[in-house]
Image 1: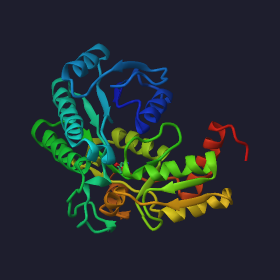
Image 2 (image 1 turned 90 degrees about the vertical axis):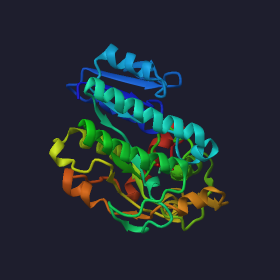
Image 3 (image 1 turned 90 degrees about the horizontal axis):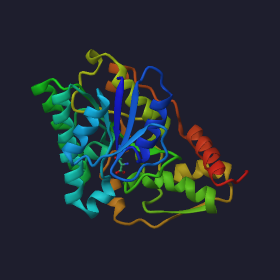
Image 4 (image 1 turned 45 degrees about the horizontal axis):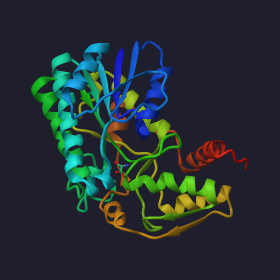
Length: 314
Ligand code: AKB
């Protein structure tokens, strides 16, 4: 990893990954790219639409890119609103990146998701190898993407590494259009107006992870020796699995007058199709994955960071 391109750099994960890469020594170029106008980066920025292979190629050539963190993607809820767009960006974007990786000998990180699982997947301790029957177009693109990555490894030797991210909780850039967004929105609601109305019910339990752990996972899996990453589809990755009411209860310990209301909509069905607790033992054994943040430490840090953002002293 010397010259790194991050696609989808304005997004929830991309914006924090670029920040983190910028602080790491020994990297020559960090190039942030997104289809939307640049967010504030000190890194170089290029407007790149991942469905446009020429644009991608020009950027790769301009900076001598040897590593791509390919994060540009449409998430589960937005993907249901426009399934053609989700297919185009998620599949054709990934194929362009993999084809260019072949041509320019580039190492790839590409995130998959718990959305590859579906209603018939075991919900608890979901194994690495299990029933994969995604219910959303997003999940279908992630599952197809996993097999595409596997194919490019077997057929062309492309070094592509991947994790199945759970919902990511963070405070810098809001997620856009995912089912797990409630686990971020609840903190914004708590800090800005002491209340939040959740679009899934109180007992809904999904795997979640704090952003610093998610970023570290991406960097660690990219840094380990290739022999330690024998899974070439995507690794199960886990941290915590709270229900919504457990998150609300933990917030109430810090903000006693916080109220969480519930008004489930169509997103409940997507949430119900996903596992509750993931078995990520292969990631833990193969490349020593370990999460740092539990629910109380996530809640502490989220409330502190968002209070600073809203200039509220608690
Ligand atoms: C979503 O909710 O769509 C994403 C995901 C779990 O991949 N956050």
